[in-house]
Image (cartoon, rainbow, N blue to C red; front, side, top):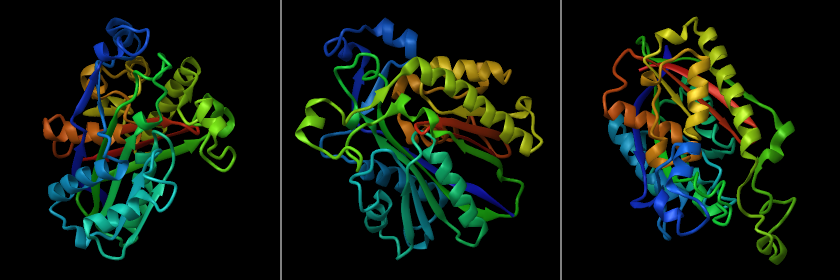
Length: 324
């Protein structure tokens, strides 16, 4: 028996910012952004949209794809770095809005690795008789983006992706996973203010401490190493070689990170899903958003081996290998 992905869904807001729009905001250019990140455009949440709104639409599509009604869910796990509010959890807000019964629902915070962490947790629930678990990755990073910082403001977009996990006895399902973290370099990527260490104040707002602070070059080095380690360890656990993969779905942070990771795994880029150019870095949403695209476009079909790997603030990283 294995936990398998029974349905997928995603959602992106209607509003789009392209690179030329950023030329009017900061000292940058379309060429500079494309060559350094691979991004051409990104979707931005409307003023009246919060993370739970994006997650709701992705969840509805995943439930429809799985043929599961919300009343039959047993749990909801949401990975997000930008919840609607500190509490209650975004998952509880979704439980009410979806009309799910009094099931347990909660958020986890693991940066851009949040969806994979949530998937790993949900797999354990499913294997312990909690069938029909809804797993979501959703973020509105543009709400905490510093639009005066030319090096980071061009990177982020908003989106949500979701899957429904069930238990079955076929060859399909999650074959192996690996998760890790290392908090020793946390300061390289963080949001300084807004928590108990630095509560909101006029000073924190004036000093722009409620936005993403990132040392890109250092993060790049750690991301490539960690994502490759996660991939190698996950594959080894399942006794699968990279050459057997139909598709690698990496966290969509930067095209150079993706290309470097693929090179280390000796995978050609035609077996790596890249949609970074159209969505930017959508944090926890990036992998389920890409997975949904892969399924809808036929890049992933029945019995294909797929590896998902991510790296995020914390730092956290992980990999999940499954047969679709």
